[in-house]
Length: 360
Image 1 (cartoon, rainbow, N blue to C red):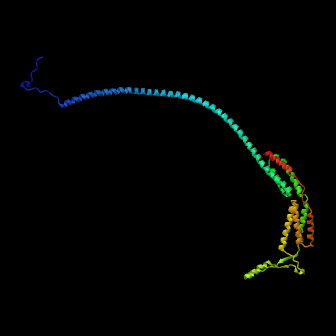
Image 2 (image 1 turned 120 degrees about the vertical axis):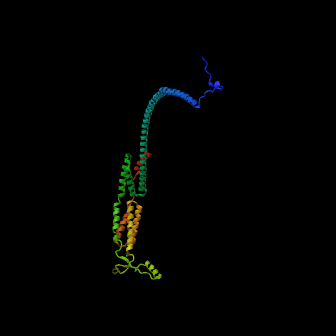
């Protein structure tokens, strides 16, 4: 190859000047290189994104399938465990049912036993309560019966004996038990006998006492003394007042029928107040005599007849026919023996003692 002709600069003796790129050119060159690399990288990234887009669902699906598989295995294991537990629980349930059945049978048997025992105890308590109530009633009846026997034998108080026997019969009629029937029958017989004894022989003396009482208006004199009326004057001084008080102690009496009497007998004439007091004393003696007669109390009867005799002797006139007739009747009554025939309540007491002994 022929050599190139020398440059004019070289001929002129001047050094040659090397050509240099400007900064802008270099910038554009570098920028173009960077853009080329970036484009390559972008293309690679886009390719990777496209590739990742295609493979990501499959990976996620695979992961989900793996997770679901793991969960399924866990669930399957849990189902097996649950099945085993269910079998075990079923076995335990059957065992519990069997145990409950046996417990129910035992409980029912125990309840039946308890009901029977409880019913027996209630019946026993009821019987004991009934027996105790009957025992208390019988004890009261025995007390009343013995009180009646004591009153009849020692006090001859047949009226009180009749009242006690009637009370005993009322109590026995309220008792709904056949065991008291023999006792009630015996008490009825006793009551009838005591009533007969109490009323036997007292009707005639009672009529005589009634005749004595009816003769009362003829016993005292008909003439009455009246108290002289005192004028109610207000005392003018202390002396007058003392004189009035003393005059109250000295009451002047006068005859209401003074024209028919020549002489004055203070014992033959009494005031109305004195007449009332004497009537009260007379009635009290008659009443007490009747009570003693009905009780067949001879001693008390004689005492009250003696009071009646003294009353007639003290307050009636000696020639008063009614008073003399009363004294004769009182003397006849004083000869009566009121002591009744003895009656024994021992059979009734023996029956009540047997009933009380059987109930203890």
